[in-house]
Structure formats: C-alpha cells, structure tokens
Amino acid sequence: MSMTTISASLAPPSRVTAVHGSASSRTTSARSPICTTPSIRRASGSSARAARVAAGKFQKIEVSSEDGAEDGAEGSATPAAPKLEIVGLANDDGTQKFDDDELPDNLFDAVATAATATEQAISNGSLGNLVELRIPELWDPISGNVMAEAGDQLKVWEITREYAAQLCERMGPDSKVKAVFPDAGCAAMLKARWPDAPFAIASANDRLLYQDGDEVLVFAAPDPPSLEKVTSTTKLANENGAAVVLVNPRLASGDAGIGLTVRRMREDFLGRMTVVYCLQPLPWCNGSIFKRYPGLWRLYLEDETRPGRFKLVQESATRLAGDDLDDVVMSKLRPEGEDGEEKEMGPGEMLFKLVRDAQRFMNSLR
Image 1 (cartoon, one colour):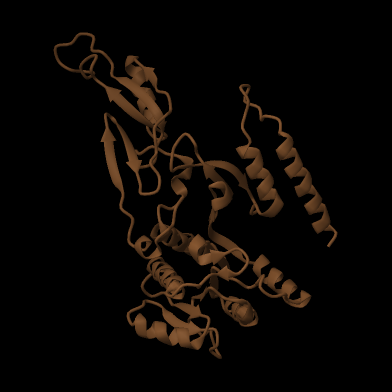
Image 2 (cartoon, helix red, strand yellow):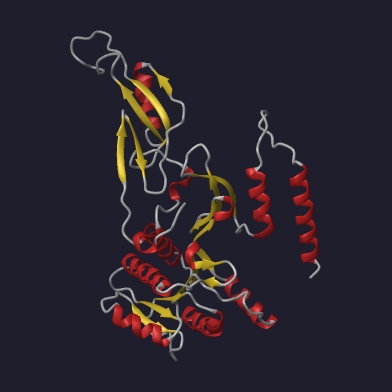
C-alpha cells in the first residue's frame, strides 16, 4: 500500500465499479481485486432456486438463462432451470470480497475509518484511546514524528484537523471535542487558520486543559516533554467521564536517554490505553500491520498473485513487533516446495539465523 503525496491524499477517494459479464468487481486506487475462485454450477429446478436464496447472502451468484426460458413462462412444458454460478464471497453491495478490503485506499480513508473506530470505542466506554497513522514520510520508528521539510509540521496538524472534524461529525453536532497541540504558538496559528473548525483548539501549555463539559480531548502528536501534562490531564478527564485520544504519540525518544521512573510512568500510562486504529506500513517486507477496534491485530504481506493487493498472513491479540515480527515474516516469505512444505534454509539463511539468535541472547543479558 502506497501513501506518497499527503496533500493529494486528503481529497475524498474515488471508487469505480466496473461490470464484466454478470459478475461485478470493485477497483480502487490502491488495490484491484481479481476474481480467481473457480465456479460451481447447479442445474436443478427448485433446488437451484433454494441454492440461490441460501447462498445469496454470502456469495456472488451469476444467473445464466442461455439454456432456457424463465420458470413459469408460457408455452414451455418443461422450462429449463437457470444455472447458478458461485464465484466467491461478496460484500453487501455485491462486489468481490477479499481480506485486504479493510485496508484504507488512501490517507483520507484511513483518517475517516480511525474516527469511526474511535467513536465506537468511546460509545462502548473506552476513555483512553490511541490512533496510530505511521505514514513513512512523516514518521520515524526511533525519532517519532519527522518534520524535516518545510510544511511537514502543518501536514501533521492537517491530519489531526481532519480526524477531529470527522470525530465531531460522528459524535453529533452537539458534541464538545477539543484538539490539544504541543505549544501555545502552534495553537494560536491554527485558531487563525481554522476559524470555522467544529472543535475547540488548545495547547499543552494551557493551565487548564480539561474544562467542564468537554467530552473528548484529542492530543495531536504529544512529545516527551508533555508526558506529565498529558498524564495528569487524562486522569482528570477520565475521572469526570471524558475520553482522551492520543494521535501519533511520541512519549519516548531514542534521541536521548530517559530515567527508569519516567520509563515506568510512560509504560504504565500507555498500557491502559486502547488502540482503536493502527496502520503501520512495513516497507522492508512490503507489508503492513493493521488494527481496527474491536478487531485483532493483523499482519498483511504483498500478494504475489494479485499485484498491488495484500494477503492476511497472521492474526493475534497483541501487536507483533521486534523479534516476533521478524520470525513471522521470515517464515511466511520462505519459499515452499512442491509438496507445500517450507524449503530447508540454505547456508546463508542458517548463518543469518545464527547471528540473529546470538544478538537476541546478548540483548537479553542487558
């Protein structure tokens, strides 16, 4: 999945529905599904109609009338039954269904889906929530939000604005949502830039972030210096029944060391949060880690049989990361033999595995 131009991605996605024969297929800007499921034909009168009713909810069905007229047509003593052709699972709109249909088509789609998942989690009583949109050009695994180029910071704020606006729309016109930005100067600039924003704007430097009546506080890219303020504000808001959302938080930095007390405080704070939406591309293996509340964590890898599409290879209750992620990806990418079993590792792979195991052992001694 590709997210290259942020400004262009914030435009609503365009979807095209093409009809080929009697089977419908949906194409999107990021993925183009291909129907490869073999068809199953049935040619019995009443049983065919029963099969059509039973399968219609789950499969796409093609009806071919080339061999006869419709049932009950005048002038035919023994009318030929229509043939039913099941070509695969289908969505509610009749388009072909694939595992990666849940992946967003672009950044606008991802932000809208994140807002929907957040509203659902808040409705179910979740007061601490995380939204992670790990856009490669704006996010570094160690340093967090990257703002190296002119305008990068504004792109991050525009993503937060779109997310907060979508959340307000889903929670209703009377909802009170407040977006909190890192400093007072940034908050003042955005107030002037977005005079018609449907949400309030504040900064992490404000003396009182939570006020009576606030329903949701959205922290935009909180950084390590604001950890204590974010933690105390979250506690106060939750005690009063208000929800908190952290969008792309970076409460730890690999650029500088932190003390054990701060590390424990951060881990305890984030450990109580619910990840309502996560999209983390993995460029090194052409894959992606995905989660949408209330679903499980999912690992997608590129599907070689369908260019531009992904296949689901792993589901888990916890996020795959570090060595566990490496092990799963390596096992899935290893070629298979004619009998469907994995091929044995060659000398190079065995040496790489030996070095990696030694590194893991040394890290465990620290």
